[in-house]
Amino acid sequence: MTAASFLLLAALAVAAVALVRARTAIGSVRARSFAAPRGSEAVGVRYAFTAAFLPWAKESASAHPGTYLAGIAFHAGIFAMLARLMLTLVPLTPPPPLERALAALYGVALACGLGLLVKRRVSRPLRAISVPDDLIANLLVDVALAAALAAALAPAATPLFQLGGAALLLYAPLGKLRHMVFIVTSRRLWGRYYGRRGVRG
Image (cartoon, rainbow, N blue to C red; front, side, top):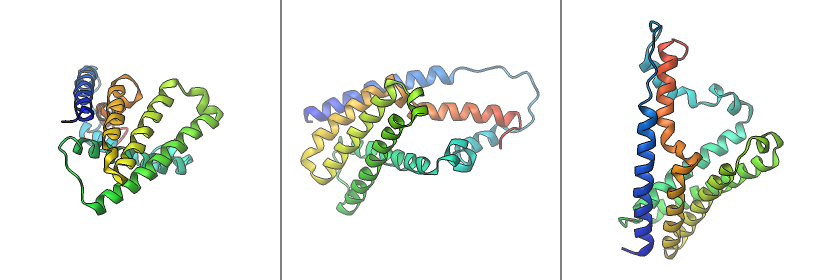
């Protein structure tokens, strides 16, 4: 195992432990319901993980379709990048056609990530509600995407990809990147609450 692979594996272990502990703590919070249910919690949870993500169900998305689509592409690239990052530990290389497709996805995701960052800095309302974590999280993801793109085009850059991924994983439990895990818990709690009240579903 190379030094970069070892660092990536160590970062993965640290991030996994920290994120699981935090998710367990949040998931253990249970508010007692006194009112009789008016709907189904299961229906509410199903809505929270499906239709609630559609643009017409999100006021900000319907008002800014370009940003919504850029966000979709950005997150798709991130998921693909993280999956490919894990494969470097095996190591396992995808077939060339798939690797080229992934490279294209990384490139699109990187462009979208940088575009979203520029919008956050240029837009006065977005800049007013931004915190340093917004900048750090975006830049770390962009660096990891750029390293993934480099590794897809030139396998010799794989150690650089692993180091960028390690930095991203180590930061994940500390800032907004935690939502990669918390979104599951928060969506489930939100869906159960509004499903039970018969508001969503």
